[in-house]
Length: 154
Image 1 (cartoon, rainbow, N blue to C red):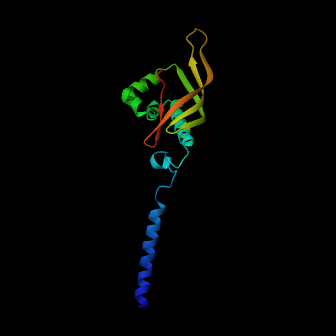
Image 2: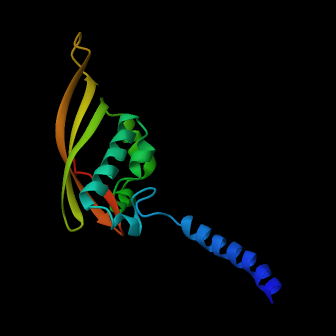
């Protein structure tokens, strides 16, 4: 009987370790991009600030197709990615940096404050490129657990 128990113990130990290992490989809360159910564990202000910062990083780096993914589904239904990339590529402004300074949220809507530095070529002869900074407020909407930028009509 002791021989039988000693043969079962290693098998039970291996099974227990395999089960524990499977549990340990599950996605930890807050790991990876903030989306879906994991986003509910993060304060909305924190989640939307992270999304806004990622969008602005894409704009600064002129990765307009990446920035397009942050736009609301409704906006994307009306404007194709090719139209968006073309419009953004032809703007006279070049964003140099952006700092998401604050977000204030009510339910599924957030107002996000962004301080940006930008440059643009002036059309007057001899003026050249100027650099300035500006603060803007953006509106973000939460849809199905994900935050999306809602562009102004302008």
